[in-house]
Image 1 (cartoon, rainbow, N blue to C red):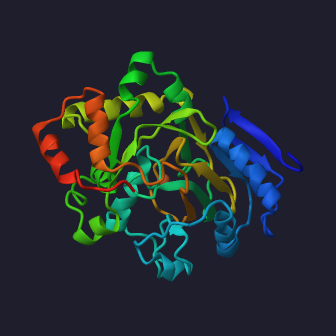
Image 2 (cartoon, helix red, strand yellow):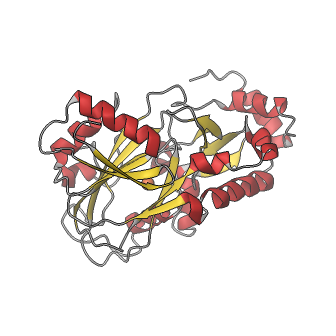
Length: 328
Ligand SMILES: [Fe+2]
């Protein structure tokens, strides 16, 4: 790893990386080295990068074919680019996001364990979150969970049971958990902007290891009753986020950036009162791998039948509806 210093954090999960000069375009050779490090550690930290919008977007663009756009909150007005998610607490006019406003309530879901854009098809591969201003150690930390080691530690019976299961991910499910009153009924515009999608529960990451693809967005397990699916999702979330699988990262300096792989980790934000301006922006790289589009529901139902999971009458009925769907 020429000129790069890698400092592992916790049992092969997470690393701080030094030696990348973000003041100029990062060479293709270094990008490849960083991807390899990323594949091994799932998330990497770069201190005091001093990235600006253009270099942030340019670096993220080197990591995949497409960057995700966020349709919410007029972000292009404040940031001047549709390719950065404005995930701080500053409104386009410079004021702080008002407590209990719809945007405030929407952000509460970020404190739940999740992986970005698992409700999307295509889903997200990488997220690159950079603190442009307002870094304060101990406030609004980001915590990561290792879904590869968590999978590995499951017993054989559980692994066999979940191997072919498919989960529906829905952004509005996690918003409702975090904000049950305001997001009890998302608007039709919100639902149209972020529809749900289905993904395999057990997948292989870029390093070939199996991982659990779950999140607070996980609404139900296809082919299982609502209660049984919710229990399974809850059990797996609880298992994957035990302290031995998690690492909490502090934002120390202006320009600190964390790059994580959404396919092989989960994350959440620690609580933030929102009482000072915190300018945090995220570039999101769309997954261009074989699992990017997930699975259509008729495939998911067939897998459930093969696995001898009994379908509820509603699911059996819907199977007919979806039987003419095409695989994405
Ligand atoms: Fe997130």
